[in-house]
Length: 153
Image 1 (cartoon, rainbow, N blue to C red):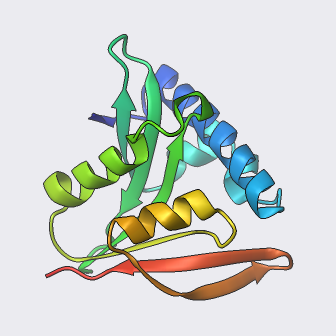
Image 2 (image 1 turned 30 degrees about the vertical axis):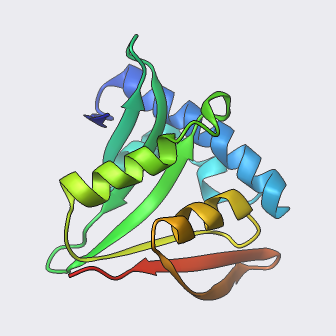
């Protein structure tokens, strides 16, 4: 695992491609194809004020990533996206990335994350990692989003 620099073109392209593949699977799971990241360009993705951590194969290929931000002056970490290339599903990459992020990179403070309410694999992952479900919102017609919080000292 290593932090990713999206200023590097090949890295940004790989992250964008993986994100689109992963969100296409989520769109099928939740029955909603309007997930913003599915329509986001590489340039729009790069312009986000996020930090990126990737699970990288032995040959240097990005297989999964997590992106997050900690707003200035806040003690809360906001996980923006967790994506695994579908060819790497069910191999513990999301758990490993989140574990490294929450243990080594940002070991303190509260953590927020959300996912499609019907994305049962993601819901199970967050619950297994100790996140508590805070509720469900409907930001767009037909899109139910489950919100989670991890409370830490």
